Each structure stands twice: as structure tokens, then as C-alpha cells.
Figure: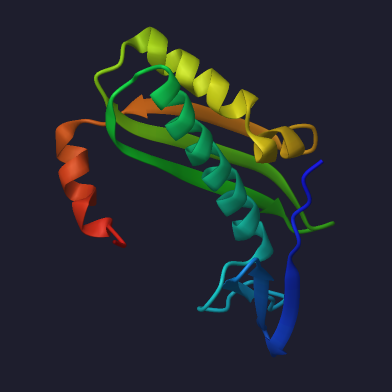
Length: 148
């Protein structure tokens, strides 16, 4: 069994720093989740699912020999207020590919089937997902979003 170690320290009112390995991330720990410098816990859950699905989508597309040039996921995380809990997550995988519709369906199915985060959440959170082929004009709109 693989173990992941994370340390989280409150560094000032409303801000915590989480560290795993040598990587540090700012977390929003205000009780209303409105700090401008970090993700709230509900956003972290969505981020964890999105990251895990992206890892799998890349790996599975490569195994399927499916060419792709753009891959992203949009997520909506719904949290109830009374007894605070994430109750539903909706996501859409966007991919530019020359793969067939059958390959897209397999990619979508395998992406969640082999996701650590999806499998952890699926019994306690309603999760709805879909996959969409990205058209060229959508990719051009996203080009300015690069962080590299």
C-alpha cells in the first residue's frame, strides 16, 4: 500500500500551507471559503478529482494510441450547507482528438474506472461526467490559458 504524507500548518488567520514532498500549496481555511489566495476544501476535492481524471485520460489515450492535442476538465462541485458535505460533482472532459466515437467512450469509461479519487468519492458523492470532443475554435480560445 502506498502512503502519501501531507502536513498542513495554519500560517495566519484564514491561510494554511500544505506540504507534500517538497511542494507547498496555499489553502483557504476561512470558515466561509472566500480567501483569495487558496482553494477551499470543497475546491480541493474538485481539484483532486480533476487531476486524477487528467492523469488517467492521458495515460489511457496513449495506451489506446489515440492522438490528442488538448485535454481539460471542467468541474462543478456542489456543497450542502446544513451538515456541510460535498453532495454532487459534475464534470466534463474536453479533448481534441482524431479518435473514433467508440474510442472516446472507452476513454471516458476507463478514466473514471481507474481513478483513485473517483473510486474514493463515488459511494458518498453523486458524480456525473461526460466527454466532449473539442473543436478547433475552442482550442484557439484556450491558448492564452497556458501556465508554461
